[in-house]
Image (cartoon, rainbow, N blue to C red):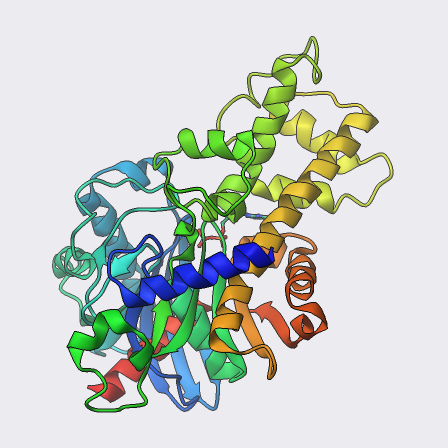
Length: 437
Ligand code: ADP
């Protein structure tokens, strides 16, 4: 793990020095920490890997806020159809949300009120300004044509223009940056934000003087101490070269059969989109070898991505000796009978897959901690995403990993569930942006 941390730290450094690196270390144009006193009403749109969310956030200062939201499920087709359709859908959802909340019973949006909107678009984008973002490449299973290489802010503004609503897009934000800023608003010890959802990524605050690749922007002229949040896009660590991370043959199959082979090598060992698939591939391998489910019809479990990562959580938290939850899971979803020994094996396998994901995540966190020198004074790491919040013992395993890397001092680094980064973080950043203008 220490070898991985050292290589990771070098990779992060390289991304700060030169443009176009595999781990792109993207300056987000979010300058410095919030004061905790930001206030006002803001809209947030969050295009996650699984859901689309529209929120109205009311910041009341002193680290306090209120939030109203509506969630919409994204279909696999929507992720692949033309980009203009995807952005039309986003705009339709925002318009529907505003219409539903204008003058509603709580009066949450007032007639004629101008609203600033922060768009949480959690895919790697290069930015020259906070209200612009050019998609480098889709991740997390998205493939919508005509978006890569284009400014997503402009695509969204074009789609919104059809609705004639008093909304201004003021910031394109990554969910990691959002989690970092929202959690710091509430707890200033927070120095790192990490997402463990469909994908995996992290953000932290870096001194502008350390980011050689943006020297030409002369950002230090105004403030020589300036800091800027960095969206690491660390899911890409070890992509293509595959030099640092130990991969099994199942990891290789996940990679080769994905829509982006070679890319997001770190993420493919950790994120929610892939853990269930890794488990399914092991099971299918054992079916092929004639070890599992002899004489049973296994076609359902042979469907790619049919084994959700939530199933690993369920298997790990089964409290019964007979492992009744696992019986139910295999019969209900896959029409398969299991023996107790098989169920115990499945549970052990999910522990291995989950534990490896958590320990590799600890390596990424450790690389940032070590780079920034946070170990002695300690820091809080804001973590969000279903994998972190719902997978039993995930946080404990990350902490265990940090102690294995740093020794007892590793206990100074504590993860906690992040404040809602894509909603609240987006709103705080929109407020910070307004002040800066
Ligand atoms: P997103 O990253 O899309 O914004 P989430 O944070 O909810 O959204 O992450 C979704 C991912 O989390 C999916 O890949 C899903 O398989 C996984 N997931 C959902 N529920 C659980 C659970 N109970 N345990 C582990 N993983 C889960």
